[in-house]
Image 1: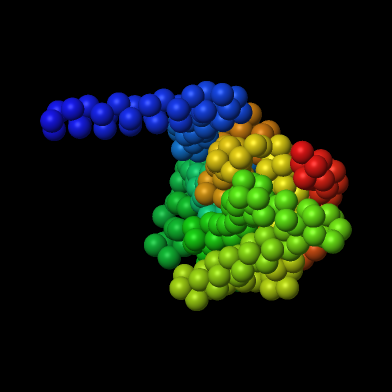
Image 2: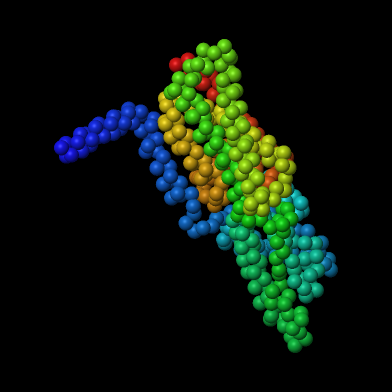
Length: 401
């Protein structure tokens, strides 16, 4: 008797499972996403992180402020030639020229450089008078991983040039050299590190702005399937459609609701970052909230378009997750884009989350203003406008189905 009851239980369970699987196989979009999701995850994990843990061709500007000494600037010129010669063999850095340290800092804020090597005005005088020549290395504090590599490469270059010069100096040693003035001969150059803003930064300073942008994206894109698809399934959407209100009001209402949700979560992340982890906001706090609002505007239109094309809430959520995971990994939220393979870097340029995270990072960590993030602002505004323009007619057509 118990055997027959268990057999019946298994029979009914298998029929229900077969029914659910049949529905899955009939849903072509859901079936495709079932394969694409793990494929995306494996490809990203396999290719996004470089096997050697480094990168090359980081753009770095050289500033020569050396005024010369005794009518010559030979030491600074020889130092620059040494840098370029070593870099020709390694290709770790991509050198360009800048006129001042202020220009380097401005270019770093705009994202045009990863750092700079500055030769001070007293460089030649120090070398020719038997003192150590100081070289200033400026790095991007918003990206600790890249900053550490720039510092390491610069130190290695300076050490190699210093070793060659030390060998020449040692050959000219004589008995008059004392212990006190032997350091410039053995180690002629020293490095002084300088950031865009005062104070030190950590990995959490790098990751906090990206988490804020990612949280806003996830809040909006996961909330829309519930706000739209679920209402279609339970029938409350039909009630709104027959109500004496403009259908555009429905779109605006959904948008405002998700906007408020995204801003609340973004504000919570910001408060936790500052209160618990000591993140310092060097830029304008109003600009930070403005960027969060702009990020919500960018993702709402995309979320409405995706939700309107799907038949049910489950498919909508699967499609949302399929799009969100690549953006989370490829937009530089957790890992510097500069260290990704070149084809991954190309893909990241087409993701709105990349520009939202970069803009927040520049404002919060580097103290950048609107001129330094103008490119990111333009991209987010254009993307949000285009998606909204597509979302309105698509949503209206969905409500008439």
